[in-house]
Structures are given as C-alpha cells and as structure tokens.
Length: 147
Length: 147
Image (cartoon, rainbow over all chains, first blue to last red):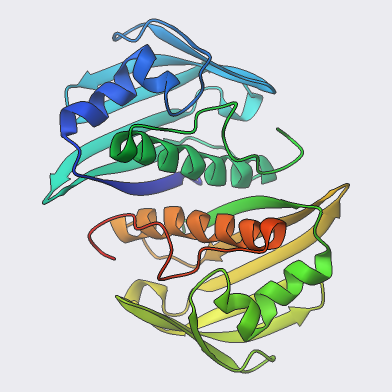
C-alpha cells in the first residue's frame, strides 16, 4: 500500500515544544487549521475543519516528546481508517519530525494532493516553531481548485 | 515499491509556460537550483548541483505541454535508476502538475526527506509562475542538517 512520507527538521526548538504543537488544540490550531476542536488525550477525537470539509482523528498513542499516533475516524472516504504518525528525535541543533500517513488503498490523484498539502503544513509547523508564526488554514498555500 | 507523489496547481499560468520551466536550463534554474547545467533535449543529461552534491538526469521523454520523463543516471545511491515524471493538464484557471518520483527500493529516511524537499521545490515552481519569483537552491527552505 502506498504511503505519504515526510521529514522536516526544526532548528533551535525543543522536543517538548514540537510535541506540544502536535498534541494540544492550541498548538495544532497555530499550524494546521485555526478551526481545531475536540479533545487531545488518548482515546479523544480531534476535529480539524477546513473550507472544503474536514477530518476527525482519534488519538491512539501519545509518547511524550517521542511519538504521536492518530487514526482517521471521519472525513474524506479515502482517509477513513488510515493512520497518521509523528516521530520526534533530537539531532544536534535540530528537532527531527518523521511523518507517515499510512493505509491508503490506492495512489489516487487525491493522495498526490494530500502528500503535497501535508508538506505545506509541515513547513507551517516548522515556521511556527522557528519564527513564532505558522500558516494554518485559512492562511495556507492553496494548491488547486479542490480547496 | 514506495513512490513519492505530489500534485500542485498553478493559477493563471499556461501549460506552455509550465512546460518551459521544466524543460529548459534557464527555467529549471529559476525554481530548482541556480546551478543547472547540461542539455535539455531527449537523450541529453541535465546536471543539477547543490551544496551537498547533486544529480544527473537523462531526459527520456518530452511531450510538449503534456509530459516530461527523466531517469537518474548519477547522484545519491538511492536515486540512481529511479524515474521522475511530470504530467501537465489544464483544469479551468489552473495548470495541474502531477509529479511522481518512482523506483525507490526502500522507504528509507532519506526518502522522507526527498518527499518533503520535492514539495518545497514544487511550491517554488508554483511561485515562479504565479509571481515571477521562485526560490531555487541556494535560496530554498533548508529541511535538516543534511543540507
């Protein structure tokens, strides 16, 4: 099965700060979408909303400053059941984020779109932590007419 | 085998302009790397150079304003033999670019890096065509200590 894989390094940031940006509603709303709702503990469901819809993610694992795992429980049909994982580690002056969105059934055109769009938001996350300012939806880079 | 897949839409640009940015040395040097050398016809080898090395791409197919196919003939070990394809089409006001980098043997960490980095350069391509200004190397977003 095809996966979306990314890696981004965040300079002069702590593992804890990156982890907080991935595991609190306030953190998530500052780089992904300003309209982030729901709970952020294990077993809770986070709700991310965009102009063109949204998705609900169940938090499956939280390993502080190391790993986060979500499963999509509602949203675009192709996303339902897929898993999104985040692995963090320190590498000298960089905090490294390894990202995987796994469980896609087919490499459809929508998957190409989502791959690029995840990169857009990972760069927003990097920018938030490096400069204090992310570019969450609705201020994100629009990639095509689907948005 | 895992693939890197991306999609980017470029607003109010023509298919021909996008095609030129992918198939001329001058075009490529304005969004990917300022140090682009070699020939750009079918059978020629384009040489892309960065601070941390570079890669040579043989041009396998050129279908004007529709499709471009390269094969990596020199560069990082994981890249050699892989293929990079670009498919273009018009969708209303957008020129859509479907991008694939196929033939990776394993989903190694370097592949995660390259996936995000291709998105960085696709956004540079989009920016070049939409605003007249890309962000080719050495002015690209640096993702980690590998660069």
